[in-house]
Amino acid sequence: MIGLENIEKRFGDNVVLKNVSVEIDEGSVTALVGPSGGGKSTLLRCINLLEIPTSGTVRIGSDALTFHPGGKVATSAIQKLRRQTGMVFQNFQLFPHRTAVENVMEGLVTVLKWPAERARERAMELLDKVGLAHKADAWPATLSGGQQQRVAIARALAPSPKVLLCDEPTSALDPELAEEVVEVLSQLAREGTTMVMATHDLRLASTIARQVVFLDAGGVVETGTAREVFTNPQRERTKRFIATLRQEAKGGHA
Amino acid sequence: MPHWLQLMIDSLGPLLWAALIFTAPLTLLSFVLGLSLGLVVALIRLFGPAPLVPVVRFYVWIIRGTPLLVQLFLIFYGLPSAGIVLDAFPAALIGFTLNIGAYTSEIIRAVIGSIPKGQWEAAYSIGMTWQQAMRRTILPQAARVAVPPLSNTFISLVKDTSLAAAITVPELFQASQRIVATSYEPLILYIEAALIYLAMSSVLSHLQGRLELRLGRYGGYLEAHK
Image (cartoon, rainbow over all chains, first blue to last red; front, side):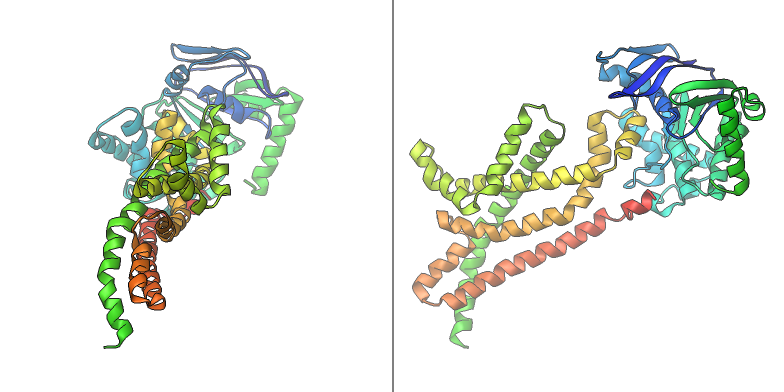
C-alpha cells in the first residue's frame, strides 16, 4: 500500500539515502532499524515528506509523487500525500499551549474543519483508547513523558491516517514509561493499524513489527520478518548491530 | 493648604485631560499600528521574498540608527519643504508608528525563531498549511515569549510620547509646560507630570504581569518538552 521507490536524499554533497526501495503492506508493521545516522529517521520522514527526497517516488494508496533533482513539486500535492499519514515524534512535540484533548482535536478542527463538538467526541474516544480520558483537560507540561507520547499517538490518529509513522517513539522515555507506549502501539498493531517506525528499541521492534528493514550508511542492508532479522541475521553488519542491541538491553541501557 | 499643593490640584485637571485626549490615543494607536507593521517586517525578514529583505533591513537600520526626536522633526518640520504638510498629531503618529515597527520587528523575529522546529513539524504532520501552523501553533507560543520585551517597548513609548511636545502636540508634557509659563513653578509642575507618567507606566507594568500569568497558564515550555 505504501511504496518507496529508488529514494535518494542528499543534503548538499552528503548522501543520506541512496537508492532505497521499500514496500509496506496495508495492516502491517514495519520497523526501520539500524545505527544512528544510518538513514532510518530520514527515510521515515520521506514518507510524509517532512523531508523531500532528492529523487525517487513516494506512493501511498493510489497517490504517488515522483521527485527529481532540481524539480519543484507543488505544496498542495505534498499536503495531499502528507494528510494520509500521521506522525509520532521522539520528543512528543505536543502543542504546549493546548490541553491534551485540544491537541487531539487540532487536526480535525483546523485542517478538516470539523465542528468542535464532533472533534471533541472523536478526541475523547481516542484519549480513552490510549488510557488518558481522565487527563483530557491537562496541560502537556503536567503529563509524564509516557502520557505525553500517548496523547501524541491519539493526535496522530485523529484524522484517521492510512499509516502511522513513529520516529523513535520510546527513546526519550525510561523503560517503565516506554512500556506503556509499547503497549498502546501493540494494541494498535493488533487492530490492524499500518505502522512504520524508526527505532533502536529492540523490545518495541521485536514485539510488534512484522517486517524489519535494516539500514546502514543510507542503504538497505537486509530486509525480512522480525524473527528472521533478529534471530538469524544474514549479513555481518546486521549481526554486529543486533548483538550490540542485545547487550544494551541486558545492561539495562535505553 | 500650602501653595504647591493647591497648584498641583488646580493643574491636575488640564494635565489629565491632555493625557486622556493626546497621550493615550497617540500611545495606543501608534503601538497597535507599529506592532502590525513590526509583524509584517518580521515575517518578511524571516520568510519573505528575497528582494524585499534588504528593503526592510534598510528601514530597521535607519529607524534604529537615528534619534526619535530627529525623526519627528523631519516629518513635521522637514517634509513641508518637500511639499508634504502634516498636522502635528498625524505627524507624531507616523513617527511613533515607524519607530515602534522597527523595534518590535526585531522582537517578533526573535520570538518566532525561538519556537523549536519540532513544533512546525508537528503542525505539518497533522496536515496544517504554513499559514495554519503559523496562526495556530507558532504565533500563540511566540506571543507568550514576546510579552516582556513588547511591554518594555510599550512602556518606553508612553514616556517617549512626551517628545511630541516638541512638534506642538498638546499632550501631557506640553500641557505642563504651558502651566509653567504662567505659574513660574517648573519644579512643581514637572514633578507632577513625571508622577502622572509614573502612574501610567505602573498600571501597564501591572497589566503586563496579568497578561503573563494568563498566557503562561499552560506551564513552562521546557517542562512540556523535556
